[in-house]
Amino acid sequence: MKKVLMISAMSAFVLAACGEEKASSWNGEWKNTGGEKSVCRKSFTFKGQKNFEIQNSRVQGGEQSSGTYKHIESNDYEFDYGGGSDNFTNIIEKNTMKVHSSGKDTICEYTKVDKLENPWE
Image 1 (tube, rainbow, N blue to C red):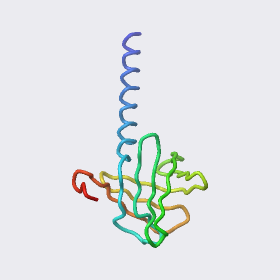
Image 2: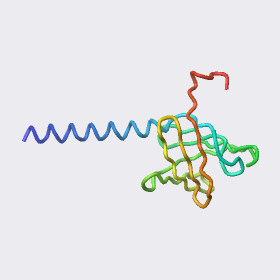
Image 3: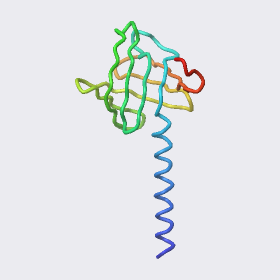
Image 4: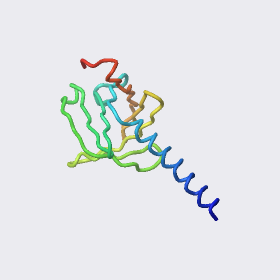
């Protein structure tokens, strides 16, 4: 019985650690490195507790929006701004994030900003 409990506890610990790793990989600022400026946001910033900020490009008016996001399924997420929402498919591989906005053909590409590399930006 103790062995079963120990194995169950270890499994839960490993699964929780894996879940934390994926969530923490989102945190930080992501700058646009490719895609159509009229469709792609200038940057995404992800913060703990599923909070985000989006900076629109100048072509899109340059405004900044913030809110929360939630996982729908697979790589699909809903971003809620409070007054509206958008659905995105986000795929993150190391320091690259590809974003496909629901209803658009364009795939936007972002690179995670390392604040230590460029502290003046």
